[in-house]
Image 1 (spheres, rainbow, N blue to C red):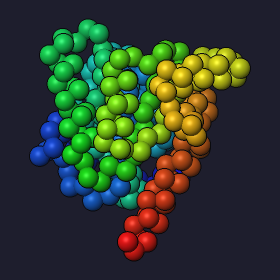
Image 2 (spheres, rainbow, N blue to C red; image 1 turned 30 degrees about the horizontal axis):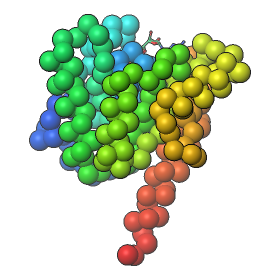
Image 3 (cartoon, helix red, strand yellow; image 1 turned 180 degrees about the vertical axis):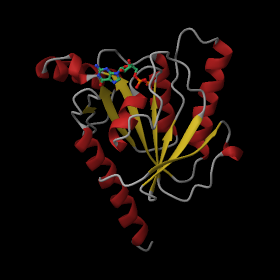
Length: 204
Ligand code: GDP
């Protein structure tokens, strides 16, 4: 997709603070430091739309953006940063689960995992919430540039196995460094949105 505009709308914590949900929304979720900001920035071709930093655990809000005036992007807070107190980690979990449960215009969750690491218990909780609330999901494995092609495929299989993904659901390999996977991710997002649009046009 050619990006003509990418606008920050607002930050929120709880549903009453969310902006009106009028556009189809794509939410980006993953553990702290996974490369979520880098992925968002790569997709929209902006260096600093989402803040990238080497200090994990900073982003504690849900950030809403409008892309090309037709899609909403949401940056969910990164979870599972060990140095954050348990009570704060629980707030983050509640914040993310409320969002997934309440947001009516949520069209797709982009679930980001680090290709180098096995899914954490927090990742598995997120996967379970997505299943519970029947939210469509695109799995992205970041930092693919850290591996050769063969190693990357072997890691992809291992992560796939730990996540117990249903047959036919394939994670996409991505690198913010080389931009590998960027076009495939946009294609998957656009395909999903046009599927939704077509479904809404079919009378029931
Ligand atoms: P966030 O906390 O999930 O938003 O993660 P960031 O996007 O801030 O990235 C965390 C760290 O990982 C930073 O040092 C990034 O430069 C690095 N990083 C992110 N994506 C990639 C990638 O695809 N390849 C490599 N090699 N490093 C990455």
